[in-house]
Length: 226
Image 1: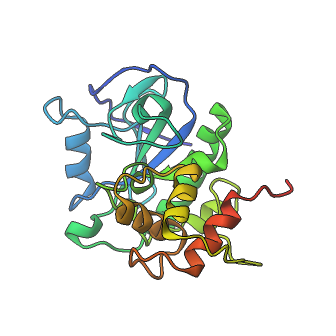
Image 2 (image 1 turned 45 degrees about the horizontal axis):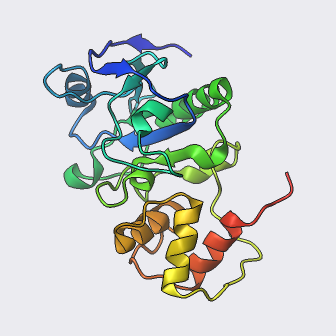
């Protein structure tokens, strides 16, 4: 992959080995503004890579270092997400500036980038996550329009279960316990449910725990033959 070097000064040393990939959208009007912010010492934010809408990939922080992209977040018991992850910013105006589908060229560039990082660090599919997965109370990105299935078809992320779904009829409290077991921070229960829906049931994001949500989560938790 060809990359454009655009070094950011915003990094420090990792305290954990890399075990996850966190995908973000930039949430700014254009790529130039996002790059300026990610490389400005005053902003104190960064990521390892940025993928532009035309498929261009910018390398900002070396993978051996901790970039500052996740903020206060948690996933599967890990709270120093920055230390444990590689962060990828995907250029998109986001919900604030005119959220729109991600261009094919952008996703075509993102897929081999994710694949190479995943292989390099032996990252499981369940640890390729969105910013909203690790910070459900604060974040919405990369959002309901992000094509997770394009990654799932290549075994780069978990697919949304669709076949042979069985509703376990958990109580809402039981669902939240299961959601926490799967990996989510459920401190804000409704926001956690919304984050789960945004990722695995993006056609209806209402924060209501229903049979489809329960069945999808059960399928994600059940062991499957490899």
